[in-house]
Image (cartoon, rainbow, N blue to C red; front, side):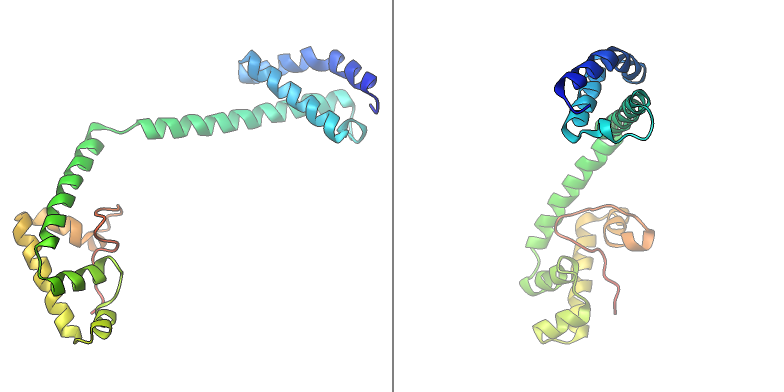
Length: 193
């Protein structure tokens, strides 16, 4: 298959049969034709027809089958992804809205805290620093850091007035929950005393 005439002859001889085989897999004529044309283009560009181990006919049919299977695998992943992104339930939506409300309340509450307490709290939660690291950075004792963190948590408990929300937010590691909750906190909570 070194000349263009030989290639055209092979193309004309096998194209329809290869498209028919591809159609059995894809059930889409346009996709089947694209797969076969892509195979022939690849065959021409790489001159693979000269280096096959079995007959050219066997090589072409096996290559079409493999390309169809690859196409179906890829399309299956696309469908799965589309299904997963469209499957937002009303519960997830309600939870999302509740978290946004909680986020808003929390942001307002944090802004009302004394500057030093807020800074220590955010360093611990947002910057992921331990009590000792914060104490060293601010040149205060570890007990002072613990006092400020405790003070902030106490204020937030009063703001929310329901322990289950505060437990969910601040003790999620203990309870084993795995979700990204508020943008104000990177790591909730830090137990490193």
